[in-house]
Figure (cartoon, rainbow, N blue to C red):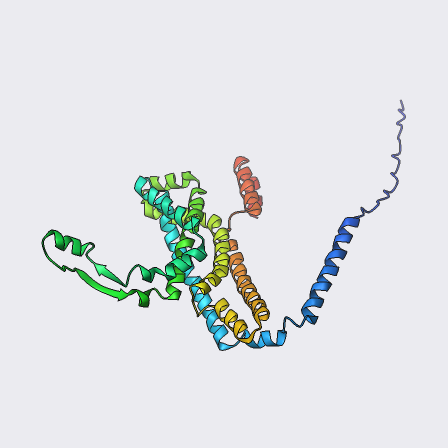
Length: 326
């Protein structure tokens, strides 16, 4: 008995006639940007107000370089004060002690509310309040008066306020204390981003609160803390120009402005300041990139995918997990 099997040949589909999508708006935008770029470059080259030869000759002279060193020193010291004090204030803000929480809240409220320019000028004039800054027993004269002792003094040593509160120190304190208020909020957000289960597990292992903070919480919180801290560092670099109003002579913007006022070439020196700040900010951006990459190890899409494969492998008896590891 023979059975006939009908075979039908599948019809070959016709080739797809693909029509490329046109983007007239995109090409129009490219054309507009190209024209604007050409106009900008033409202005840089032909406009004599820039005075490039004078600018390049002046922006590398010893006073400008000394001002650059002063700006970098002011940036580093202010950020060290801001980061160190900010960590302390953030820990106080997260404390169970209501007094510590209240003090930290008042601190952040005050220094976030007052502009840094006002703080710099205010700290520059603190010498009006005290002629000398002395260390010793508080309220020594009042205590002596209670016991009938005239002119009782229990002061160990002191300094002239004019000698201590120089322009550089005043600017450093103003910027550093203001930065501490912002860093406190950044650190607090980073600490709170860590799962509470990490702290509970560390407590179960017998670690102290200080050890948990140093070894468990802060290393994980750095992934959240580093990016805004990098932004704050770049913002601090720009805010160092505010101390020129204290005034601080060993500062980049002050020196460039002085050259512009002396030579009546104000605009070229402003452009020179812009170029210097662009270079310094670019260096900080590179450093921020590598810090973020270092502290982001183990996070991100690839890390989550590897972890998911490990979980699947564990559920299926280790087959997928072994494949993923290979």
